[in-house]
Length: 108
Image 1 (tube, rainbow, N blue to C red):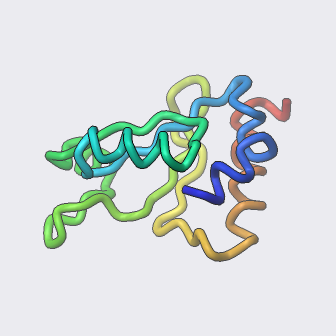
Image 2: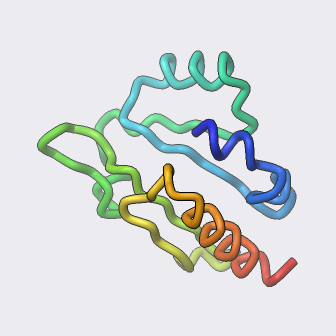
């Protein structure tokens, strides 16, 4: 999440024409506190029951958590990019993500 925060302006156009949502099975209170303390400029959503994770194939019932999966959804609601698992320690993953976001924004 720190990499998203630190590259937010570049990867996500500072939030212009882009909405970044981080979804976790963690409790909303824990997420809100963590997001505030770390200064994340995007929205965290709690999926404590794993319902969203199940819908998108990210929920791991053995551990009752969502796997680190990243989706880029275009303006029409179509998933235009999926990284499962997202390789957050690989710098090329952010290059790929930036290109997918730009493509979803219509090259803006």
